[in-house]
Length: 177
Image 1 (tube, rainbow, N blue to C red):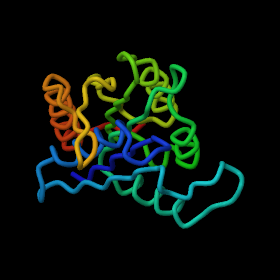
Image 2: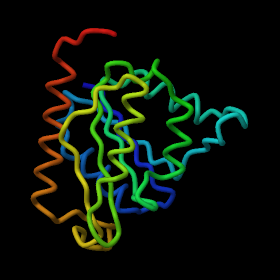
Image 3: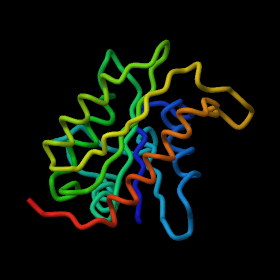
Image 4: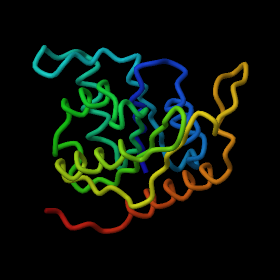
């Protein structure tokens, strides 16, 4: 499986990025390949304002991926603008019938509202969003010299289940619509 993990936080070292890095470490390699895209370091202009090398690379990575995990911080009970903008550059061509897992982080308390909205967006590009999702909050993490570490074991297990589901879905036969 070729898995693309997209971290939709505008800030380096974010909780969302910590989950994305954990997902990368949980995927069994070398039989599966993982590519992590941390959008805060990518040059993705507002849709309609031109294209960059990074836009082309994002489209290529998304197209070549067998499955995706997409994460976002919770911004006002929605997903981030940087993620919205990146997704606007993608289309059905990159998502059709592709398994997708979703995760988010909220500051004070868990909230899955951003994931509900992302499910609608994914439905619009014909992705197959898996039923299991993960929602974290800041208290699920510990800060170390190496960065943020997710220490909530239930959520770590949930992420493992999500990865297993993506692998199974990737290798099952799908019907094109």
